[in-house]
Image (tube, rainbow, N blue to C red; front, side):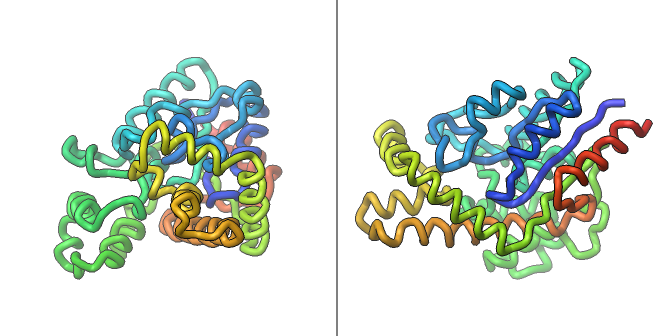
Length: 289
């Protein structure tokens, strides 16, 4: 039977390291479900898997477009399904790994996207205008959309992220998949974020942003990506250097909270705290008929 393992969690939760080890153990390949690692050149600030990690385990859907070209959840779903089919056809296990909730949900819930949504869908709610959010909400939940204050951005975001309160069917995975979520203590997650930000800045993250601006200009993708937007403010002298690291940490923590809020609506997630727990879940899942 064809199987799919999903490893999800907030930014800086350690998904990549764990997924590499699990894919090695279970003859798998990784499909990156991240709305920013799909972009060429956005490497340091997205904590993109390293060349060494990619050499250890094949990674799919990295560097497939440039940051001047928006990439929709509908496009991701199509590309991910193609990668899943390819991996399964070779007798291996696809691991869908990432923190972009809409990207992941589009696959495991088998979302249906209309063609005219492709150019509007940005993949992350915070990167979408109110008009785009309203269009997405109206097409996903047309009845409920008419019942809320749909000119209120917060209410529209809540409808999209949490779904209608009585629509329990949408809270269950539609395809055969094992969904595992990394459950980190908030204090540990904040520490991870701080360490990662410090590491990124020491690896010429600022230079990466400068280079991207030179090549592509101030695109919506760059200006709506955590870390990149703060460095753009610093380069434009809107933010002092001594405040840069703390500002990125704060923005990253806010992103992690939004991701966790998104994930909480999905009752099919099995929350784990260690790789050993993941191994047990995956072993049982792959052995089941």
